[in-house]
Structure formats: C-alpha cells, structure tokens
Length: 296
Image 1: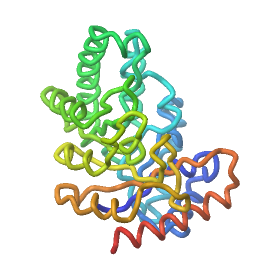
Image 2 (image 1 turned 135 degrees about the vertical axis):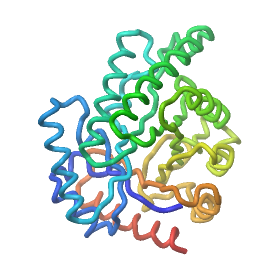
Image 3 (image 1 turned 120 degrees about the vertical axis):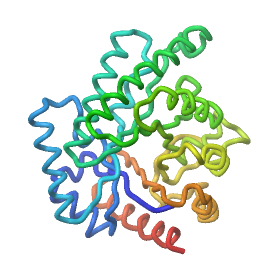
Image 4 (image 1 turned 90 degrees about the vertical axis):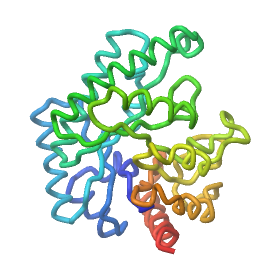
C-alpha cells in the first residue's frame, strides 16, 4: 500500500489553506491527503462553505497536493447519524451526508467516507430493533449513493468501528454489510479499516489482529487509517509513542497483493492541550519513519 496523510492532526492549529498546504508539502513532505469534515463542516451555509472549500482546493493545487477523499472527523462521530433510533434523526443524517457530498465536489475529490453512526443502548441490545435499524441504514445509504452518483462521487467508504453498539464492527459483519449494500447501491461502497480499531483488545481479545482484518476484508477495502496505539483504547498516537503497531506488522499489511494500490492514511488526533510545535515535531518524525517503512 501507499502512504497518505489524514488531516485531523491540523484541527484547531493550521487552519488557513495556504499555511496548511505548506505544512503538508514543506514540513511533512507528502502530496497525498485525506481531508476531514472537521475542516470544512458540511452543515455550514452553502455559499460560505463552498467558497472556503474552493480556497483549500486552490491552495492545495498550487502545492500539487491531491485530496483523495473527504472523511468524517471527530465532530461527526459524536452523533448517532444513520444508526439513530428516531426517524427524524436518520433523515437529518441523510441530509448531512448529502451536504458532505456537495462539499467533496467543491474540494475536487470524488470519495467521501464516514462511520455509519451509533445505535442507542436500547437498539444495540434489542435484536428486532437492531435488525430494523440495519434495514433502514441500507435504505438510507442507497438514497445517499443515488445522490452521490448524480453529483459525481465515485465511491463511499464506510469505517468499521470497535464498538458492539455500532456496525460494522467485525470482519464478518463488515463483509456481509458490503455485500448487502452493494446489491442496491448506485456506486461502489467500500470499507475503511483503522489500525487502532482492529487491534482493540477489550472488544476482540485474542482476535485483535489488523492483518486478519485486512486479509478477510481485502476484496472490499477502499482505504486504511494507520496510527500508533496500545490496543487498550483508540489512541490515534503518532509514532514517537511506544505501541503495538510495529514495522513488521506494517510490512505484512503492505504485502497483501489485493491492497497494493490503496492508501494507508496516517490519522493522528493530538490532544488539544498539546503545543503546536510538539504536534508538528511528532508528525515530522512520524512521516519520516513511515516513509522509510513504506519505501523499504
């Protein structure tokens, strides 16, 4: 696989389009990025949102930076979205995803992605309600895919999450969902697999294994998020921290032939209280390390 950069590290720090473009290209030495909904919020008023998105597009174009997708960030993940218990909430989520599609087009990318959302406590542990929300999700994502096709989106990526109150949260569940949704979707829908999610030991125990996830889901994957973690929580650390994502494991992931043309986007989410210079220093060391790993 190839190395890319998710821009979550820049939230609340490098906001101006020209400055962020310079950080990406001149400080972190990359040209391949995944933009986030945290940087340009789909809910912002259309005209101002689109103008700001186009400013990023032009600043990145000047630096020869390619946006490979527009992916949900921390703010979108706070809400139940497509898995919400109430119909009105799910209708709002459909509108939100459609607005994300509009924003992606303004940014000049043809891929959007997000987790599906979160089930309520009642729905997560009620078999009938969970099945009902599953069918509702298929219907709503089909509607979103129709709109996406009309607007020029090529793929939608669904992120797998390490919670039993969300889906998909296991390799088998993920493959089954992709099979079900692609029977009715207007464009291909693929998985995004995250290292920190796949190796989350409190949920998966002895089966917390990224290579197993990639091998089982390899025909349905669109992209990967990579970061350092300890397997105990979803850390989203840079690689200056000690953790369980080793060079050997990364090499094994990159050796899966079916995934060789896909990107692993470094997704670091620093604590807000850390100083900007510390975050940037950690990101520079991490990108240097990962470039050596991926090129070796």
